[in-house]
Length: 114
Image (cartoon, rainbow, N blue to C red):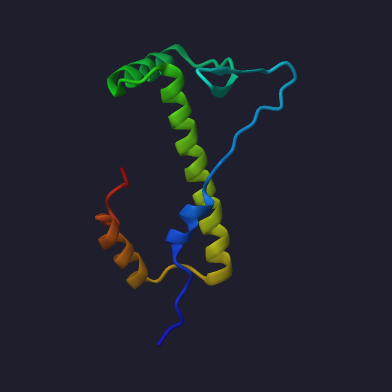
């Protein structure tokens, strides 16, 4: 019988990300009691249009939509980094482990995750 590896679900507990600006002169204040860091960002016009459309379709404000997108990217990057270090230390996942994860998540290896 093979030894059991630590559960990758443990990773999710370690994925809280705190982003803090260190720019000199960055605005920090609060909007309705929530601390904010106001930033100015630039996009190509077509991308900006798509972002605005996506925010409207989601029923979210532009800042909220961008914050959610950034948070999702930070979580994905943290998860990727953790899994890379975990696989280096523990070895890659076996085909059986991958099949179990796919079944639990309702995915197939040839389908991208949503």
